[in-house]
Length: 503
Ligand code: GLN
Image 1 (cartoon, helix red, strand yellow):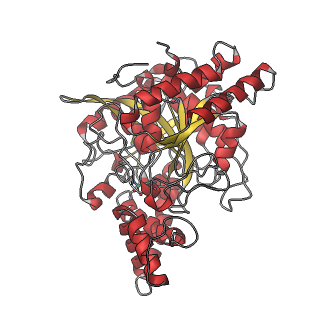
Image 2 (cartoon, protein in one colour):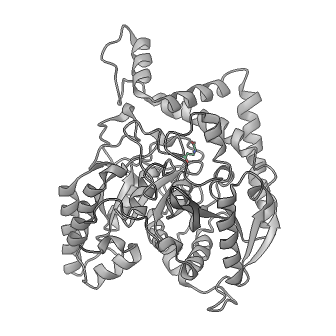
Image 3 (tube, helix red, strand yellow):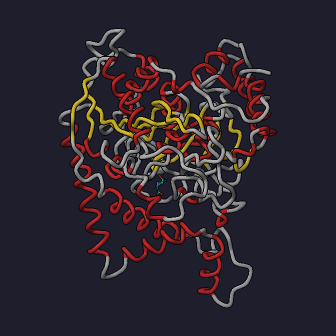
């Protein structure tokens, strides 16, 4: 039995660099673990031959003194929302079952150029619509802390794979919380950067004014290494920003001006929006979040009260804007150009109708219908235009709050992971996005950091996440604070108990 799967990205980078382990050895070990944990539903597809070939190439580069950097030879996998030439790309939808992209997403190409070894593609909610991974057309993913519970979504497979130690890191996407929520519910670390930080080229579109890529890993340090490789301007994405990419990994280790060893967060003002700490948060989530903030105070941070008065409105605003954009983006799946095509049809309209009825799942259909409605003549002004105005006000509220603080903190989710199949009301499910939607609508970077556990008599410990939100382009500051917290706590190092034999 080897313990290679217990190592994170930074530790593996060291071990690979020092020649203590080869990428082939590591990849072989993780492939065996993956096979022993298929019941978690983390992967939609994986390929041992291709992974081992990439690993041997990485080892050969290193042996020749031409390693591509710290990530060379580190195994990862991509959320199945990123298109890849080496694997099918489905967005967990029957509409795209078996679809092969002729090109790689920019984020996939960037991580390949950094030398990472891609094991496969990870499960998610269909077209990233959902927060539980139950909307995958193929299978649910299971929370490794309690396999009867959701892992969160939509990047559920990514968080499951990292939490269960099948991978040191994975990519995810976040439109309204899909990196932060599964990271929180699975006890791992995830960051959604500022809108425009990572290229969306080759990310299967859900809601284009909100979609962002982001890494999920065990620690802030590991996320920093991944995010550095995933960031940067891309001329193929008109919304990617020509913003310099800091060395995130170096930034987290650099001491703050005026800080000391015992007080690494000295001078940092953390704003606590009163709307994030009200009756809507379960007591077993609020307590670890409060305790984590007390720890930040011990590390030198100052807690200040702030307000984000339109927090509640972020739900209707998001659930108008995101479906509106989705209805437009998903009109490309018509059964003609690519994707599922109905076997028989009487005419063109019938072909569209049948292909879309057969190819899309219920949540995707619901959103296409809502989106088409709010954009339709006569309703556009009443819904879509109003939502756009409120979106601006939500972004302005953050700027007012940032006049008093450097970071904003709160819970990621109102409750811990719920049992699989326990929510049948879509609107009640939408309400659980309340704490992640505001930063998404504002385009701000947000992070989920393991903050502790809620104890349930039946399930034992279930992870709780602390959300940190920064101002535009302040990912380094977010990662720095999370790293300081992780140097003083061990929540991010805890792994779920193994329910199957270790390999
Ligand atoms: N849960 C939200 C939704 O269902 C967010 C999903 C996401 O970020 N992709 O839309």
